[in-house]
Amino acid sequence: MTRLSDRLREAIEEEIATGQLLPGSRLDEVELARRFNVSRTPIREALNLLLGEGLIEMRPRRGAVVARVSAERLIEMFEVMAELEAMCVQLATRRMSDDELAAIESAHAACRGAVASRDADAYFYANERFHYAIYAASHNTFLAEEAAALQKKLRPYRRLQLRVRNRIQRSFEEHQAIVDALRDGDAEKAALSVRNHVIVQGERFADLVSSLSRLEAEAIGAEPEVGVARAVS
Image (cartoon, rainbow, N blue to C red; front, side, top):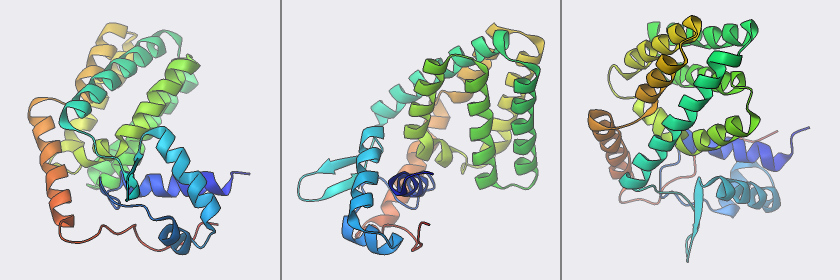
């Protein structure tokens, strides 16, 4: 059974990814314990796990806060993410089974449905399934773990990108190029398609920074909240 602290970590991580908790938001142990209807001990354990993932940081006199990432650091992280995913898809092209290709195609089909309904949230989760299916198909556990770890750190920013007008449609088209290359067994084309899909530069980076700035501006003047009340069972 999953530990309570792990479930709390996932709940807080999800709020960071969805923008309920913005960069710089304070994570008060007492308030979190009250909100999730638990003691402070599993909250403290969950925050330590998030600290290890790099999603939060400890600040003097403020305690735990959602980590802020500089523009330069964000570019570097997306550059590394693009290369990790390119390695995954190259290996997947050579090593994947028919069932693993079917899992990738199934996630791609879910993305298609989310595009049709213009549901950015549904697309976000289907998109994650798509990328994790590629990691699994690489049959390189270490590489998959490293890709998944960086994926977690970039979740809030990848999600924000999907809120930019027409981004989910373009993202789906980029997925299609990846799937086509996988079906054709073209590792080089698959890697190039993934790099173009993941890397954030030019207009895409400007859009991401603009979205971040707008969200943070909305929080100015008040202490950021720690999300919507609910209990973890």
